[in-house]
Length: 255
Image (cartoon, rainbow, N blue to C red; front, side, top):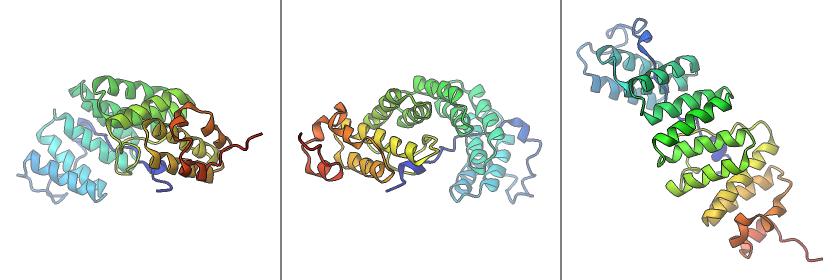
């Protein structure tokens, strides 16, 4: 659990446009049946991506897109494979193509933001994540993404507000590595400690004692300098008499 939240991966939500069609291998070259249906090709691409064979996944999606050039979902999945392969330029182009085909495709919109976030263009990332939230406010990942972007811009109150909303929608939104979404760009142990403390606030405000304590322990291990603030910050007010909290952060000595 120590690095769980710090290893939340950028959701592979990316897809490529028709310019890949010209470069796509012939079906027989990729070992793909020429008579395979779009649905069969999509399923095979999903399976290849699941085992991290991104090149093969891309081959399947490219052939599928030859058969269905206006399929926004396929472009998004192509982009996901491109993103996971590390080809961010192609991934962003794929997401843009997906959104062009379906302007209300919130996941593809968020994926454009994920690419921008990856290259530390936080202003643009925030724009796309906010747009994704506007399209689907009930998607916890979009709030996680936006929260990570605000954290990376040191806008802590905005960050915690988004993390809180994510937890309201999905209590496990910040826990599982398999969750899609981005994690704050953390350059130093000090920032890592600050991030853990911020998440502890979010869990505390929700009343999730275990999640709060785990984050506080990480913050402590990484040398967070202001742990005593748990006895000042309003978010921890309901937990201050909890012996487990006092074990992690001893209460201040009475003067």
